[in-house]
Length: 275
Picture 1: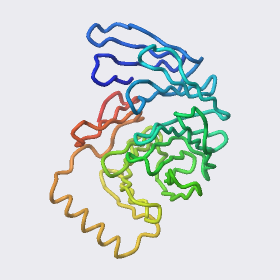
Picture 2: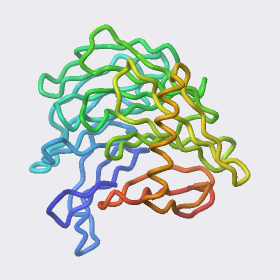
Picture 3: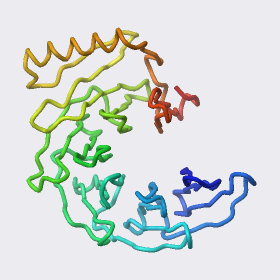
Picture 4: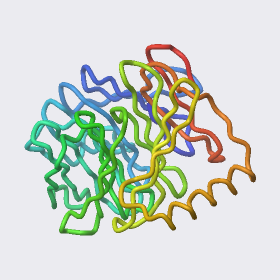
């Protein structure tokens, strides 16, 4: 579900039949609906908040649905079977992940065409643009890794980061990215990636197991850099209180950040709760 800014309307996607429903929140009734395919995967709000972009599995395409008409508009046809996508907040670009052929397609929404295709080293399952649009981060469940790409770099420079668990959720918050993963339906691992260039190390991984926290330093991090990072971490812990449960729950499916950027809310399907 998505809410349209400055209105009382919400939009729900039914993936099984590929239909988008417009809901009037004040009346709790469906006012309009749109359908541009047989089955869908996800939808995102456009950068100007005037339309929805819906990723369809059948047929494989990315479709624009403007709010004014709520009818299918621009359609970008895809060659591979998509599994996930994201929209850039800074440019009219989209990234589309295809696990079958291990590619990440960079799509120009203004031109309604694929302008660049990245061949991933590991089978990607999820992708997100960094909040400033400069980098793209992808996650692979097969080899439990994250990979960062320079969005404006045509040479596809990449920086990998190993995980203990398969990535399930990617989210950007302020000056860092947050990843949650799961293993056999158990609680998730949290990975923090500060905003840096690809010449620097991706960051550190914080895994919680049996109530204990273990920090992992990314490969290639120098001793001096590691010492400065630990000093900054100690200063941050002194200046703020750490909160939240050690585990996010069973089978996390969705994560959002509160408007004050103080909390991340994780919705868990199997345990039926929110952390």
